[in-house]
Length: 264
Image 1 (tube, rainbow, N blue to C red):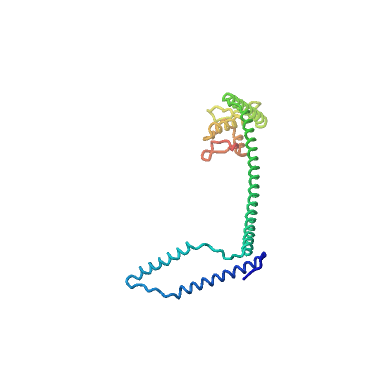
Image 2: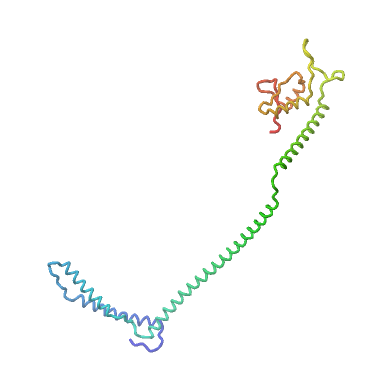
């Protein structure tokens, strides 16, 4: 089939190429039919397997020699067909390369964005490290050498203040109790508790002294804070302390009382 000597479009080139391929395929089929209808060589009955292998080796050797002598042939010799097919292949290759280039550009853009973000994060971390270094340097310059003597003096000063405050509170408590809870008097004198005949009278102690003994026992002996009620304790004071929950009786010995744990 002759084609005009001008540029062919792609469809015409494909059609001509298919026609040439069909002609070559028909030629191959004819050769195959000739080989098929050739007389089959009879193998000797002595060792048919060996004869078959030798025959196959000869056939493969002959085919190998033919392929060695044969040079590749171009299916179509029409230059216009080859140009049209080459253009089509180049257009496909160009499209594929453009897609690859677009993908590479997108990846490069993403990598640049990641790089900028990482650089910004690195700069922020570096600023934070510089700030921490400056803070550490300031703190190191402001560190005062610890002195045991100074700490002891400060502790001693605090203890003195606490003792002074304690004395102040106790004095205020004594004045309040002496004013509002005095001992009973007889003709202007503090009353003594009268005992039965043959026993001496006992001098009563103030409510302030009772509370001081209870507080002292609770602080000095917290494991045994009970105080035994003696004859010098005026009964109304004891009842007053028990009634208002200031003091508690021992669960097994009612003659012993203790101060309530107001500090807990």
